[in-house]
Each structure stands twice: as structure tokens, then as C-alpha cells.
Amino acid sequence: MGNSAVYRIHTGDDLGVAYAMAQRLLAHRSIGCRCPQDALGRAETNTHDLGRYLGIGPAYVSLSIPARLLGQLRDVLEPHLPPDDRPSQHRDGSGYLITDMTTEVVAALRQLPPIGAMVSTPEYPLPSTSADAVLAAAGTNPAWISWQTCWPSEHNRCGFELAINGAELWHAPAPAGHSVYVHVHPAQPELAHALAAAVGGQVMGAPALGW
Image 1 (tube, one colour):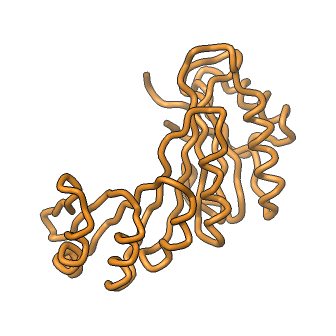
Image 2 (tube, one colour):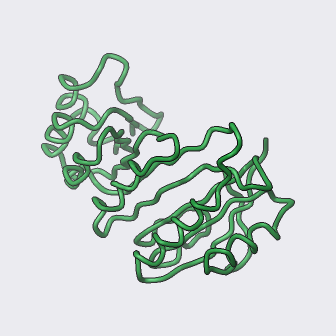
Image 3 (tube, one colour):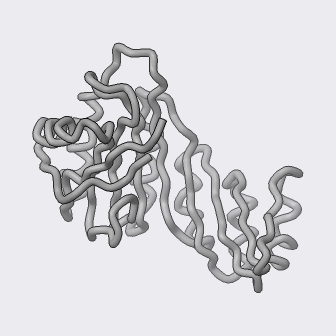
């Protein structure tokens, strides 16, 4: 299917303004088609700060584990992981793990030095606000919600995103503050400009390669 073209249409310091713009984009999505449409939330944090996300509902935690901590992590987590959730090991000795975020896993990880972590919600079929709980829990952590939707005139490679606290999604380096992005078919740059204008934003710079 290829990739979308993603355009930044807003950056500012007021989360309420950025969130309201995302909600206006949500109101512009096509609801008459049968295409799957969903939303998911993600946040960047560390293993000593995971507790703040236990209240967001079902979630996964993924870890890039330094080689020096891989053995200790296996020891403390083994009693709390399902049989199929075991850390993988790379050639350099580092590891990777993705597993359900439970109170037991969060408590066990606090026995080790902090490790960078990504919290992810499931994909919630629209209409749903379940992914929004990530924003409330994030505090100053970089976080974002991705809405995969259809636009009335386009049903491929579409959607939009709200990134908070300087989360880096598509344009590097990421702008500070809170940003809104729209995804459109690469052959339809005019749609990005139209969507931005419709919700009170404007296209800011060149597009990036999206999802």
C-alpha cells in the first residue's frame, strides 16, 4: 500500500488547544465506509515511572535492555511473565522485551536501575476515547495518540496524530510543545491543506514519510 505523507499542522504550548484541534479532525473523518478505524496511545517513560500508567486500562510495555542488566531483568521478571514473553537477546548482549503491563511487572522492574520504556495501549476501534487516558497519565512524558481513519475523499494511508511534550514522530528534531499531524495519500497534498484550514491549523513545512 505504500506510505502516507504526513504534515504538521499545529505546534503550541497549550495542550487544550492541540487536543481540541485533534477532536475537530476526528469529527471530519468518514463514518460511512466499512474500513477499520482505530486509535492507540503511546508514551515514552522509564521503568521507575510506569506506575502512573497502571490506571489507563490494558497496556503493553516494551523495553530495550542494556546488556549489563539483561541477566538481572530475566531473574526478577521470570515469575511474572507468560511462557511466550521472554526477553530476546541481540548479538551485542542487549535485549528487547514486550509484555503486558501488570502491577507485578511494574513492581519487579523497580528492583533494577531505570530502563527506558514505551507504554502502548491496544488499538481501540472508533468511536472510542480509551486511548486518551495516556495523555492524562503522561505528565511531562512525551506521548502521542494515533488515529487511523478515513477522510471523506480518501480511504488509504489516512489519519492524524497528537504528540505532546515534544514527542518525536516524523520530523526530526521534534518541535517542543504539542503538535498535530495529518496523514494523507502522497498524491493529495491539497487534502492536507484543506484539513488544516478546516480545523484552524496550517501546514507547517514539508511533508515527511508517514505510515
